[in-house]
Image (cartoon, rainbow, N blue to C red; front, side, top):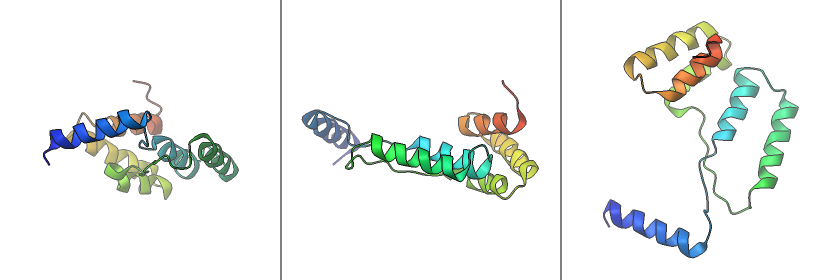
Length: 115
């Protein structure tokens, strides 16, 4: 089955079901960053968020998660408290790929730059 046929198959399944059965969980990534990276949330706030999110979506709703998979090393520098090394590596990431919107967003949050 070629890519177009796979897309058509997925679209037909979605239409027949009448609802979307899943989506990427970007809110999880943000919650992990706020709690363990930026220290903006307490662990209680993180737990409350995760509980509310689990209650909001149907049990069979598929929500794959990832934590900054393209920038994992930079995220780990941040979590380990090496903010300057994280900033340096996000800047390097942007030199290699200026369209990396995640790196742009995270770098702005780390440096306070509102561009």
